[in-house]
Length: 203
Image 1 (spheres, rainbow, N blue to C red):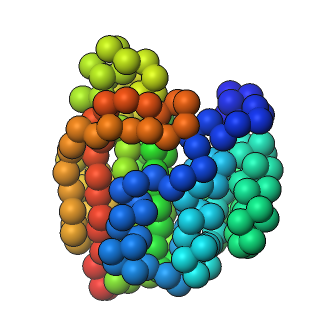
Image 2 (cartoon, one colour; image 1 turned 60 degrees about the vertical axis):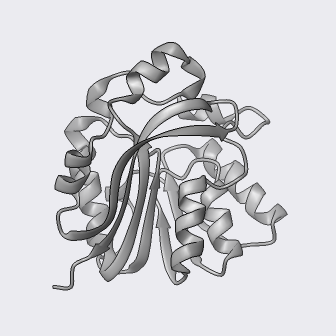
């Protein structure tokens, strides 16, 4: 499905970074080594690379990688981009200064394991930035399919789910808010999201 979605010429989620991610990165002035799981066409990874971060990204889609690397070359930055699931990739625990999960939704039977694995990859004191659709987005999606996001509640987030999955992170921000998205053709209109910024607790 994802290869088919990304095989088109246009960038289906646009080339501008996610607004919440951009504002957080700029405000906290995060650099260092950053991980972008389920990064898609590279809009957020490229923005971080342009801001002097050492960027590592992955996705299950080879088409996503192709477009992301083309975009990075056009913007004169370098990103390390791998194809595969997180358990298949050679990332060591306590390696990254930050991880960015933007609309990275996984089936509920593997979501917690993936979140915990991402958490292990972040250094103590490192940051996680997450924005994803909340369960409340279902009503928005019904009224406006162009907002996108999963169409089943178990694939969506609540504040409690995110706090539980990242319980070894001190929440700097955790909120559910309505937003107006304008991200390519597939995230357009009013929706509801969970936003989370957490700092990994020193151990």
